[in-house]
Amino acid sequence: MATSYDALPKHHQATQSEKLVITASSLGTVFEWYDFYLYGLLTAIIAAQFLTGLNATTSFIMALLVFAAGFVVRPFGALVFGRIGDLVGRRYTFIITLTVMGLSTFLVGCLPTYKTVGVAAPIMLVILRMLQGLALGGEYGGAATYVAEHAPDNKRGLYTSFIQITATAGLAMALLIVIAVRSPVTGVGEEAFKAWGWRIPYLLSGAFLVVGLWLRLKLHESPVFQKMKAEGTSSKAPLTEAFAEWKNLKIVLIAFFGAIAGQAVIWYTGQLYAMYFLEKMLKVEGLTANTLVMAALVLAVPFFLFFGWLSDKVGRKPIIMAGCALAALTMFPTFHALTRAANPALALAQETAPVTVTANPAECSSQFDPVGQNKFDTTSCDIVKNALAKAAVNYRNVAAPAGTVASISIGATTIIAPDPKAVTGDDRKKAIAAFTAKIAGAPAVAAKPADGAKAAEPAKPAVIGELSKVGYPAKADPKAINTPMVVALLFYLVLLVTMVYGPIAAMLVELFPSKIRYTSMSLPYHIGNGWLGGLLPAIGFAMVAANGDIYYGFWYPVVVAALTLVIGMIFLPETYKRKID
Image 1 (cartoon, rainbow, N blue to C red):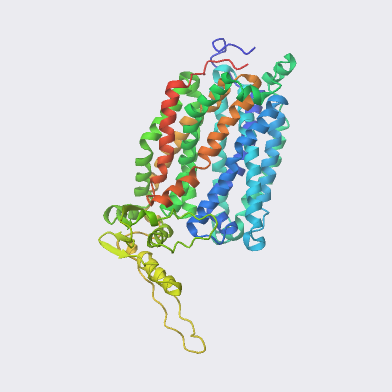
Image 2 (cartoon, rainbow, N blue to C red):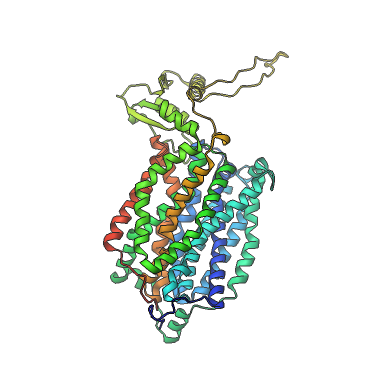
């Protein structure tokens, strides 16, 4: 029986055994998150290497969906490894998950690209991503349960917050290595990194796997599990007990809707989607975006421990609910402020020369083409929106009656799109190219000899598009970035992550009985973080592509966080003084 909460010494010091448990569990989990999030950092490069042949918008969304494939299978990993963990043991299970994750990541660094083996390349990539997801589905529940079952009752929030650090620490570690490798000063440089240097961070996972296994092989089984095995009280059918019996299924549902859902969308918005937003929407150069996010992560990491410690004093629920409330209220203004700080020229252009698309809604597609067959040239609306999607420009939509040829208004200038019904074949291609150049501009084309003649054709001068004329920048000016403000805003977003994520491992452990704890907590956690959270970047950018508003994707996390706040306040119990054996 665990020591009662009030009987524990107020200043309990971690023993050497407890320190080894925390270190081995946390460091191994850091390596797993490092492996898993490398892909997220390199999405644009992965798209270029493995998803050629698609339009730019679709290629990026498809790359995000390949990223999401690892998240989709996480609940299945939770079921498989959660059952093993409750039947065989916590330690044994997360040694297996670390091995699967490390080997899968190492092999990604060895994969041939699309240019080498064609469609087999993305297929192999998806398979390895799914293996990563299965491993991660078993890792988190095992590590959190293992540490919690070693922790004194009055420090469970603090001890498990070391596991909560691991996701952000793994992301920060991946960022640091990517920055170092792609930097011309410390690594191979940007061009070489895009060509082949991206493999280096993946190949390094082999070394991390060796270190992680060395540490975890030193561990012993958790005392709670050993006691269950000795007394014969462990579950014989953890899946059935966890999800087929209403008394436990009810807790699973409350945990999911009242805590995990909001935590998941806040985590992935505050860390990954924010980085994509900087690079893709605000046009901040990739290395700069990585560095800014890295700075915010480093500043915010100690707050995982702070909120874990605070949850031991005031409870888990008030901190998680406060994080959901702040996220729902401040997500939109924070990202608007991020635009002004990271790309002030873009923010000014959006205010002084807003872009409007006037078109018949029935002729407008979502600009998402997973099979690469749509050229977006069969309706005037698609021609307009495809041009704006390529330029990553924010716009609003105005509905027009059927038969109207779509047009775009940039400030006071209105440009009518080519009518596909009036032009066909090469004439249509030329008309679309000229329209796109008029909007977004076109680079100068060098002179070349004419066919069958020695004389060169006249060089084609660069075309300055209407967007450039009214101040829309092609890229964010590094000198104009308000770096302290950008880091402060990113820090705030990660601070929200620490509020909802820091105490949640302890809460989940405390919600479920020990004999089915690994299974019960793993499945809702990975459905939330694997599906609601992991699919967030792809869904968010698809929402933006369909609507045209670069902020439209934030409705997803705001609505989910608000629903979690309401459900959690009503149904979620406080758990911080519960015994867990």
